[in-house]
Length: 50
Image (cartoon, rainbow, N blue to C red; front, side):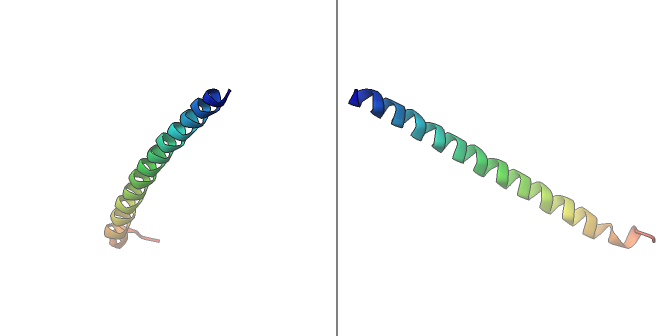
């Protein structure tokens, strides 16, 4: 019975680590894309007419 619990805990821990890494990478990529988009908007600010 104890071995079964440890196997479940091991699987849950591995899943949490994997999801954490994926979330971290996704956040970094999203941040970089937002910075690039903001820089393009700032660079093209002088061409905007209202």
